[in-house]
Image 1 (cartoon, rainbow, N blue to C red):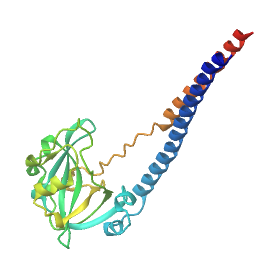
Image 2: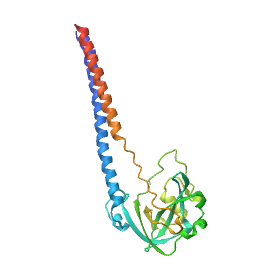
Image 3: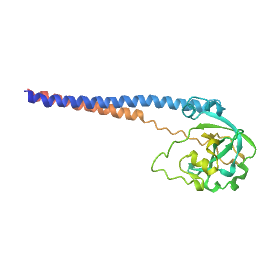
Image 4: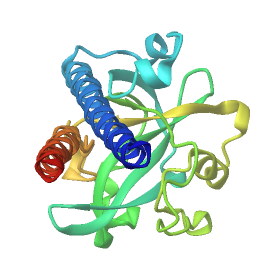
Length: 243
């Protein structure tokens, strides 16, 4: 009798462990769903809030988290001679986002993503009207820099050509001749306010945060339900076999 009970006890234990794991995974995805929804709501609120001076964001305890996608303003003059180019597309057109150093009144430099230009317009001479001179005030979104290359499939940057496939702020600074102690450690994505001549085309920030947690939760809970059905049928069969 003990030998017959031992496999049954082991089967029940394994069943309960797997069921608990599936339910835990489903619950975790529900929690992630709630977190992601709150994050997206916060981003939307930041993008629609009144702009504040970027110094206000930098004064926060954790600016790169609390300030991400926050509307900010920054004043300075552009150093167009040291534009940097981030590979991008817009409405099916291949080109670049133009990152231009903005020299602040205190001498510090922040890179401004002024917007998109097609490959045909990467040469500044072809959009000279947009190379504005003198002091300007930029309104845009605060963006924290990446700490490292996002993926091994991402091509290597080409700082010597001022072309980038991921936003390496330190490589951009080195290419533009900006000293480390002069570099502001963030980007600003300019809003859609038109530039003279129409280029670069601003307002290109994309918020593309996948939110598949509900489908993941349903998958885990669904597998738990299937396991329960299989367990019930197996139990019924075993009970029938003992009679």
